[in-house]
Length: 366
Ligand SMILES: Cc1ncc(COP(=O)(O)O)c(C=O)c1O
Image (cartoon, rainbow, N blue to C red):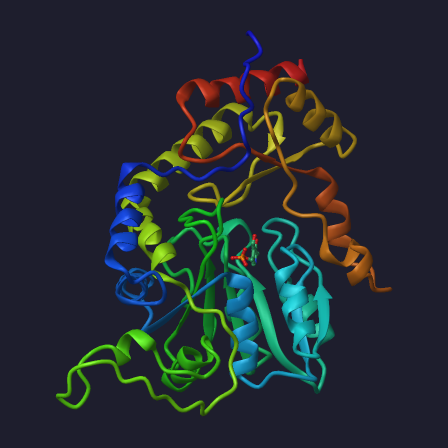
């Protein structure tokens, strides 16, 4: 097979004329900040994932920071898994917490309830359970021995049934290469009214929505300029420019999920004798396969890069990064991550692209 000219990315967003038109409408409307598009998106998203309340934010990262602040979690211990993006370990540090990074389960790479149990302390105020690649973390098992606050990190959750329903809050991501991307954005969903009522003003310094204040108030027309800051917040609300893209991506989500599943099934069927396929093959955010022999991983990545196929690793365990190092060894993550390889998986891929990836992986193993 000929080597292609153009690189095949491991992840990428796909937009079209719908997103362009939606953006153009927002620009023409004269309201670019947090306004009607954000409200519409929050309502539709809450309905889609079955939550009572939703607060749209600039990113999952700032959503997590906001939740910790709204819950008053500071100078406490927050437990999170080592197989994750930096956010889950670092946002607690911004709040003067200790980040206790724990091990994951071998099959799913989700947080291991046993490792959580071993690392609980009298000062544990939150556990962050990441649905790794979209696979549900075992939050029910953690609830058997821990009755505190649980944050369900849904950055990778691909809107499969039940995603986001196990934690006290769920935090989602619409970052540029996620399943429903808008460039950068996030959502906090919860059924906790009290928390919701704090999160909304705290997403803008404690100030009530400007857009709401442009509506007629008490029957009087005009702009009600005055506000009172009752809470100290951050600046982390989503703006209409991003929400407009999210709303269009949301309409395209069902088709995009069909495409993703097709790619995943094709890999599963064609590569299962060569690679260990991901445990949850229905819908994953990134297709994180594992090589059978650790020493093959980098060789395979280099070989595919030569063929213009980009691959990645989700993730190098967080506790192996210089700034997050600890003395504790986390043996499952330390063994498994060296075998991980994420293959291209996104709705822009054509049948030719899928066949191309499969062909070169088979060639590598010949
Ligand atoms: C597991 C996990 N949590 C949190 C985040 C942070 O999301 P965001 O980029 O929206 O801040 C990511 C991003 O990749 C992630 O993979």
